[in-house]
Amino acid sequence: MITILTSPEPQTQLMAMVLTMNAINAGANAEVLLCGPAGDIALRDAPASATAGQPPRDASPQGLIKMMMAQMGLKVQVCAIYLPAKSADASVLIDGVTAAVPDAMGAAIVAPNTSVISF
Image 1 (cartoon, rainbow, N blue to C red):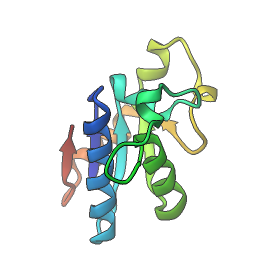
Image 2: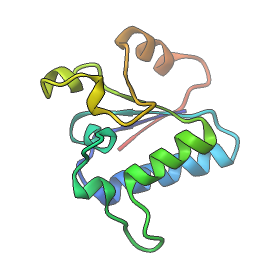
Image 3: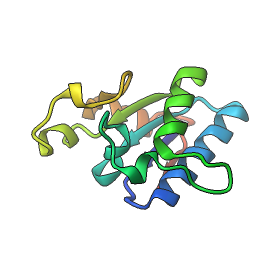
Image 4: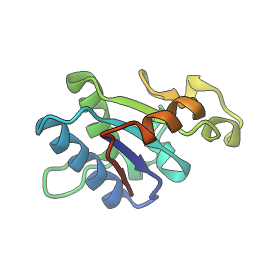
């Protein structure tokens, strides 16, 4: 399963992570691709919208991503053009997040039995 997240809305970002986590708990192999404003979730110096806890469990998009990476082995990538668009390099990303390679991501998206969810 690949979760593609582009939404700037913190509630949508968190819900995408909640659904990804529940899919993993149900047996899915999952990875996340963050593009556009959603890429900011992966920044070391992320905006408050990515780090502020939300009801009902005081979770944040970045907090949930970090937990899934550490505890579930979730692979998280930013779109290939995200860092160049910010005039930045990978040092601005939280540990474990990388830039996607377009041909590899394209192949993963069309691989047999891959489900893609997008927010």
